Image (cartoon, rainbow, N blue to C red; front, top):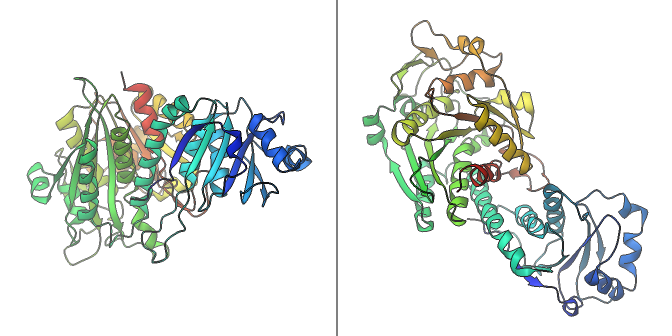
Length: 488
């Protein structure tokens, strides 16, 4: 997988500043006062730093934004990145400050003069997240980024605070890599292999093959993948870091490529359907994070891995399939396949693990993009408490999420003439009727949230903490949810 840039923490040594190569980054508060390290940089640059900080241009910088001095006189560094960051900056502003430093990062690395800033660890996370670059399929690899050394007042305490944050960064990178891979590389077999490899981190990983799924009655999931040469699978990842309590269950849609099946998608943009396993990618990234930071909680991650393609034996519009729950489903649109995959995995998760709560993630509906664009995921729930905890976690991590309504009037749109339900409810409220479909496979006693990440999993332009492409949205939010609500 893509490895995050190396970040280490050290006590402040002002004598080392002059000889530091690459980028020297300095945090400047809203009053423009320079600390000891800043005064040394100013002296080395013959007052250039002080003039920049006092300029009108720098005064208009928002928290987390930077100005750059190239080839500073009196220093070995190629550039000095001067970052505006108030003493009482928010976590989000500190991460954006780190992202600004990451944009100036080159082969010689960086020396970050963080002084005594209370969010120095969050700055480091911002550097790690924004320094990501996916080059696995390129013959010419990206230029390596050098080590980032962060000088702080209390290096040991900052390093300890950064440890779980950098574990989360690795989880985000794992998700981004999975979402970025082409479908001829990330087959269902390869996806399962990468998840099984995480056993070395302490996860218990189990792969259910097609014969196992047939015995369990997962006919809705199997129908989606029956035209593909790729075998359908369900992978179960368990992290048992808590006591004897029942686990939180995370469920992800893992359609490694989605043609739409017989209800074929338009050709334009179909290449992006390699990201239709984004929900499974997030679940995998969260499980990796929990294992890396040795979370004191019990969490099980389940992903349904299939390919939705076209062949003579493909599922047809008008077919009726029987789910593991026992309900029959009239397939009106074979491009509404993710909910069929999730229906069986959701039921299996409850039947086997009796979870204290369950959250599913899926790139489920194009309607979600129309409703909320590419900045905010849609959240649907049967439980106000769990939903509130999830939204609080997303807010704390700066990942946009918004709760949408559910209700019987939307559920009525799923009535079928010949089966227990249809798999679509028409164009109106398409994201809501998709959530209502999933809710039919959630037991009344199970607190549940569905997160539609269709708009946020992959972006066509840069984001503050990620370059163009896969974002890893949801790893930080769900890790925070576990940390705040499920660890003793």
